[in-house]
Length: 94
Image 1 (cartoon, helix red, strand yellow):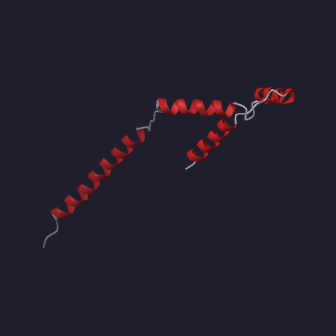
Image 2 (cartoon, one colour):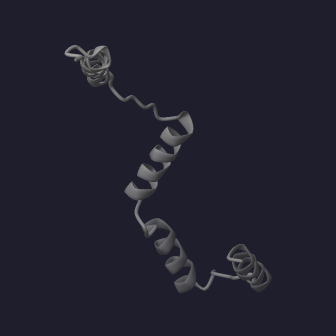
Image 3 (cartoon, one colour):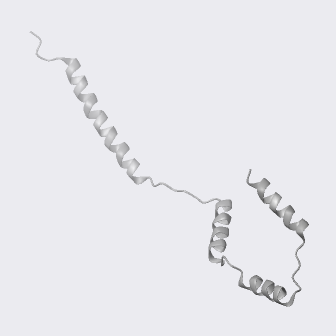
């Protein structure tokens, strides 16, 4: 009759050995911290977005200037330039 089985003891020892290794790897994983860096290009984009956000949507100076020209009769529009800009805008949306 066999009372002592070597294979069972080996399996138990492996289980305990793996447990110790797992605890060590979990501890070392907890010590590591994630890091990231923001590229210079992303920083530039962030600055540009802030400037755009902080600038007013309506340029009051430009509106006043155009109103004064219209009121005085000195405001002239080049229809060719307007047409070119309209076509340019339409083409850029495609």
